[in-house]
Image: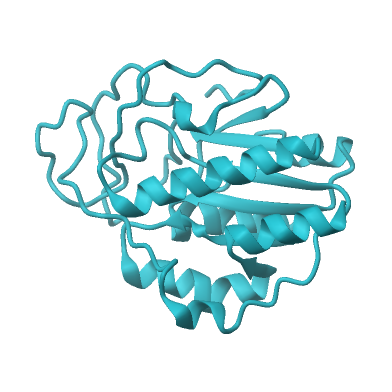
Length: 236
């Protein structure tokens, strides 16, 4: 098993999209992916904003974007297009203030037995490439993971602590898998956590809403991309 932590890795020129971790049969898609199921997007639902309690961003806050790579997201799906756009906007704002941007991709999975199939088969070339819409910069950090959360055996905790980061903003896909697992780990490691709720999506509306309404408020604070950017500008 090979885990890597690289800075300023290159991304591919073309953006192909696919989906993973589904129990549904494969459809012969060129990326060997299951039948397409739209990612759930609750960013337009007003009731989600009623309980938003975003209060502050620490002076040294890092942005962590989860699994926006060619083998995990696909087009055309409105929710994913919006997630990609908002995550890219957040990355640009963090770079503007010289704050760490961490781009995470997944290169494998845990080996334990599970009841729900993750889908197997040979992954195509470029499956792990970050999507070019993220506009990866030499100043960015990349983390490759083989579990749901970005902290397990990746060196991410050491990287952030060496950079004196005390808070993380997390975005990406999927809400209830990579994003939630990373947020849980960050919280348990003592980081303040903020979740960009309109810059994430999930395969299931129910699991997406459960994470945002029941789990995330216990791990940190939630806010929209606009709210995070406004708070970021006020705190610099």
